[in-house]
Image (cartoon, rainbow, N blue to C red; front, side, top):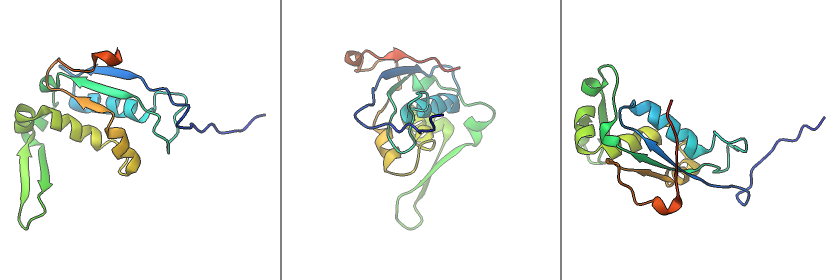
Length: 145
């Protein structure tokens, strides 16, 4: 019986490009699928400490859906670093003004909080509309269930 654990090397990794169409789909479901693809968890060669993931392009972020009462109740907060400067923006305003940032923040929260997570996030491209400039990479369509 062979009990050897496989560990991917950076030279063995084959990266692909995937497109996810977010129109009419819940924000969290699209973000979870994108995070899975970025980490490489859909591959049999997944290794937790190596970036084995693929490149992901997310289109139509402006048409993403928030379920329940999240559109009214969810608040995005960040601190500027100055005293008393906690900035807040509602999910409704964020999706109207900057839907790419809402998607980016959702995916960023699902990735590891270390060097590997920051490196993984560089393989993500998010667009509010259906146009993108990555046709040369011949991306495949990934269907969100």
